Length: 291
Image 1 (cartoon, rainbow, N blue to C red):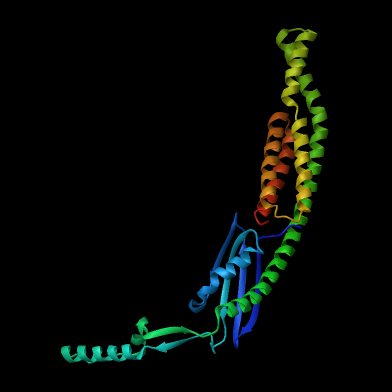
Image 2 (tube, rainbow, N blue to C red; image 1 turned 120 degrees about the vertical axis):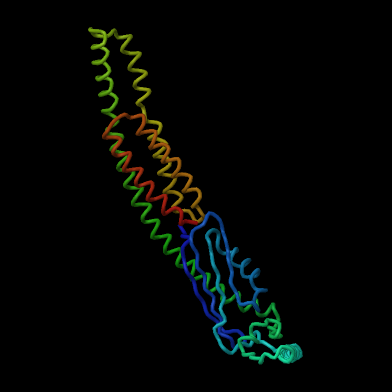
């Protein structure tokens, strides 16, 4: 089945009386790019979370946000560097005495000194905390993948509709091509006759017809385009990541239909070529979202 790279997943859990929330947001990308944002005291979890995500997601630009939602944080706490704080205040007082400037130190001034506060982690073992976080992450990933699967099914329906439309346009081109070469041959006969002021010999006409028919023949392009259509549909039923393969097929299909339009030299065929190209572009835009 097709899987989109666009999705969202969220899960909440409780660890050491702390409310933990994990959010996953994914958009399309050529490769798998994972960005993880955690509170500073949980930075050690970034790599384990990244590794776990890589085991379940193949492509996409994915952002993982880990939030500690509870005010009663038991995983980390701040402590005051009391000796340094006393030294800071003594220094401020000394400066005031030396300069005659009245000291005006407020809470904002103190908090602007990062050395005065120390972030201390709780004694909980990292392995235990990591295992609990992975459980929450797993739930978020399942929700993300569920959304990506539903989006993939929606895109698959669009692809099938576009493939069917292109198939009908191609059948019309095939019918038009049956009349296209004879019409050009008759036009060629008339032009040669006008130039020679008489009917051309069979040899002269045969040589010109062979060259013209070869120039106008688009049967190979039609066969290859049909083959690509069939292969595209086959990939839609694959359980593997096929986004890159689908994108390559679209490039080949665009090349074949462009050659058809150039070789056929027929305004009606050109109109259907334009319609197929329009369908290909619509599919190409959607393929960028497929894993």
